[in-house]
Image 1: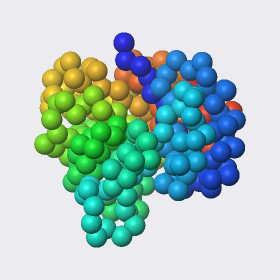
Image 2 (image 1 turned 45 degrees about the vertical axis):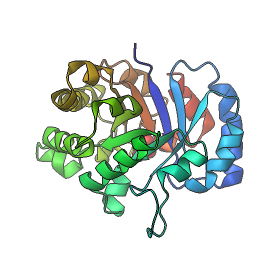
Image 3 (image 1 turned 120 degrees about the horizontal axis):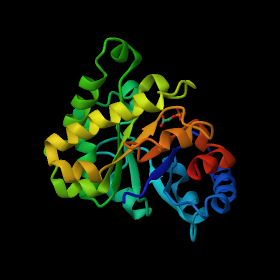
Image 4 (image 1 turned 90 degrees about the vertical axis):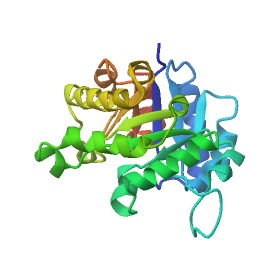
Length: 248
Ligand code: PGA
């Protein structure tokens, strides 16, 4: 059985004080969680978060990683730097990175290789825009993003990778994909992985849904056969709400 994984994506929220307060409140609320619980915090909160979750079920994640081991890349952070801070997971290719910071399938691929190569676990994000959905291109877009992200990646790396399907139009908008639509698109994503790596590997891959997932819709989404977890933005910023999603 695959263990579901619920991850919070804090985005650019919380200073150290807020991080400590939120995680201290969250830890007891998720102590009986059956799923894997991760919080992906800003770089500057990593050390505070690491201390706050010590001895709890919560795992530590970052929100981006550079592809090079080191060098002249002002403002970037390497996989080794994250490892040194005991980071376990890293989000790669979030739609906000693609939209505002010029991430492409190729840069996502390079970051993914660097992350797994350094021993990090990756949450790779894919998803269509509203325009692409309305043009009937959803399946084509997510398949292209999967093929791009996994280009040249060995099958062995798959055990360190989680995929997050996040329709861009559902992120932070309060509009959730229907559970059926999310399930159908995740099936398309799994098919793309199957074509690359075979049935067993595709079946074992954990694929999350993300986009306005919250305490109200979490159980319905998590009941879908293709959905193995959630990537939670807004609702991960309140301990009570995130705990309700985790304990769906
Ligand atoms: P949201 O964000 O839950 O606020 O829609 C999800 C995400 O961007 O990962």
